[in-house]
Length: 202
Image (cartoon, rainbow, N blue to C red; front, top):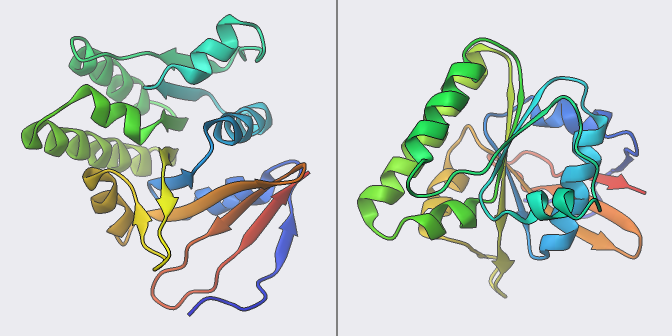
């Protein structure tokens, strides 16, 4: 059952959110607005000192960098895989993740599935995410996956089929991101009777 009045944690430097993401692997951040998603990811990237791997599947973040709306950080490695080079890029990412601690951002889940159009490919993508999660856990890395989703009146989340599989995994931390006025709000979606947490970024 959800808390009626969960505590709101002010987290402008994103330290608490970073610690929260370390509890689970992977973490899935749901959002219904792509611009709010990019704003949050940029704030997170700015706050992180460890090296970052950013797998840009929908090319929105790359577009912001190219247009110089967002400044690219020196500790960020940007990957832009496509259907032809996906396995090659994945091999490169695995090589890096197996040797060093990273923040790994996969943006977005929808972009991944737009590359593939059959069940076998969907299973392959899920297997890739589970493999990265396993390697990331060994290296104490953090894995964050974004997904565009919306909520139905019955509180069920609508997202791609593969996303539901990841979301239901007991090892996955699930969060919902929204913006209220000028504040970014991250709310955990609790499992197994745990309490919800809310983080506010001004």
